[in-house]
Amino acid sequence: MTTATRAGTGPDQEQIDARERIFAAPLESLDPGNPARFPTGEWQYVFERLRAEDPVHFTADEHTEFNRYWSLTRWADIQAADTNHEAFSADGLITLNRPQTAEQASSIFNDGTMTQEEMRRRQQAGIRSLLSMDPPDHEIHRGAVNEGVAPANLALLEPLIRERAGAILDGLPIGEEFDWVDKVSIELTAMTLATLFDYPQEKRRQLTRWSDIITTPADPTAPEEVRAERDREVRDFFLTMSEMVTTRRSEEPRLDFMSLMAHSPHSTDFSESELFGDSVVLLVGGNDTTRNTITGSVYFLHTHPEENAKLRANPKLIPSMVSETIRYQTPLTHMTRRTTRDVEIGGKVIPKGDRVVLWYVSGNRDEAKVADADSYVIDRKNPRQHLSFGFGIHRCLGNKLAELQLRIIWEEMLARFPEITVVGEPKRSHHHFIKGYEAMTVVIPRRN
Image (cartoon, rainbow, N blue to C red):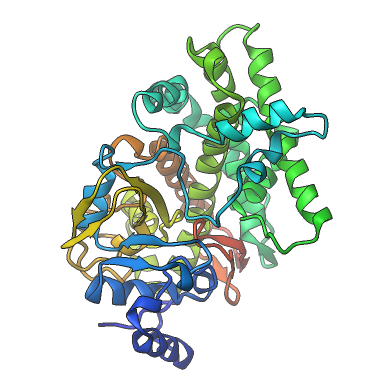
């Protein structure tokens, strides 16, 4: 067993102590979804232990805020579940969340004028999306927007992304500290998101804000006015997306997500909750994976100077580096399923109706599948061998677009900057689903 660290420079005493505490704790007490472990890096020791001692792990009610659930932590078991949608249903599930009443789930649609009958109807509908549906609904909803990230459209987007990436990089200060997340990672992904939604570029940061709000779990202990403000912002997103779809039904079809949804022959049958859910999936999927992997790539190459030297000596390694970063970062840590019957997996039987969390972030560190998995190695033999995009019918819709943006930004970066220095440690997100960065200070000493 090894003690990995975020910086890749060897374990410090704090990390050693954290690992020892986790390995000394009663196995049944481990809650892999504990959000507090993710910004500290302690998540890796929980999954290291579970892969070794209890790869199909049960967390009981008394040990978690999320109610009882099972965890799959080894590559083989995760892949088996992810490719078996008949036994492991996605219906109504995406992430490991706190229990939520139907009234709470439907409150985002309520502007204060909803009748009791409307509230009951929307409570019964719940919130569903193309990621939380099984066939045949899944194929209908995914098929409605799939063309937006098809190869032909990506070919049209590539020169635009390159032009924007170059302009962003050319505008960065030299010899001064700045926040890479804000100036580069968010800016590029927000521009691409606005194009994918055909949303005004001058309002692109509103899309990022909506994504951040939606993916941050609601705090039931927050003051009522704070919770009401969050609901208002989420409702604003829903109303904006709904209005865009309605408007585009009367316009000529285009390749943006809202137009594709509007002109799908099935979209008039989509419920409000399904329209909202699909819009959220497209928003978050287009934002977090790329944004956090761009930041992660700069951080990992800074903390692994030997890998940075490889890349700069051979820029043809960029695609391999991109895939390795997506594995090593694992920007979305998991997806959740529910068993449709008693299922035997990994030598245990998971009862019908139980929630099962597929921990991609753990499977990507499984030594049984990935050699030297805790190391960041940009010239691996099979760099695209990772779980970060998932498998089966729910494999990431925009995975090629994510890789395209990452490849382009690094091609443009290598052409401009011989060095990017990270100052201190990044500020990481306090989240058990989005594994990312809120801020990271860097300095670019000079241009090429």
